[in-house]
Amino acid sequence: MSVPVANPRILLLGGHGKVSLLMTPRLLSRGWSVTSLIRDPAQESDIKNAGSNATGSDVGKLDVLVDSLEDVASPSDAKRVLDKVNPDWILWSAGAGGKGGSSRTHAIDDVAACAFARAAAATPSIKAFLTVSALSSRRQKAPWWSDEDWAIVERMNKEVLPAYYKAKLSADECLTAVAHKRNAASNASPFAAILLRPGGLSDGAASGKVQLGKTRAKGLVSRADAQKGWLGGWVDLLGGEEDLGDAVKRWISSGEDAIEGENKEEIYKAL
Image (cartoon, rainbow, N blue to C red):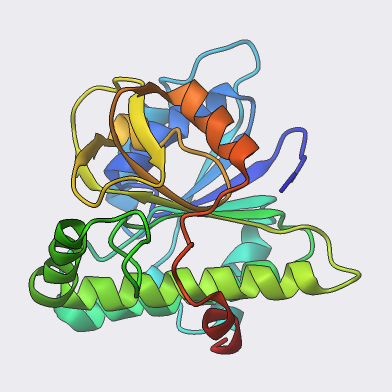
């Protein structure tokens, strides 16, 4: 889906995360303005330092907004933040990170994420919402997975990270549903929901080589490569052998979506 905005204003939620700190200079180097939301004022210097790595003749403007995603419990709470920034696009790279137990994971990774998705989809000027999700966030075995792949995913979701899985899946389905609802409206402006679904994230340098689209269930991808994966729909991502640029072009031209195998009608109805 095309979401043309010449010099978009980006709201980056979870601005102090590792992926966000890598993404910030990349966005600014494109001439895009970024408002990075963080919860702790002490993190502001890290955001500014990341922004200083932007290059080019037309570097975008960087702002920092201090607010707490734990306080976002409804679309109206999220709208309060959106009204401060007036973004064209939203990037969600936030999460509890395993801190604070399952209740905090639910509050941030599910409730706040869905609140922002709903508020964004209800705001005509917002054209796109990208969330950094997880490859294992799905209810059904992907048609291209082996039984071994599915066993790995089920163990991760049910035994290792059950609270994270439930929260992430709920938020992913929420974003998918609100995007579908807006795009189905006859008079609505286009709204791109981009669910970037990396496998295990590493701190290695960008290799520029990936598996992208419909991948196997187990593997790693560097955060430096993950922050470059702007596409549309559900997009699985691992480290691999294909050039990242070629992989992106292939996936876009294919028209495919890694949501395949999920019950989309049930997702849409559950909203």
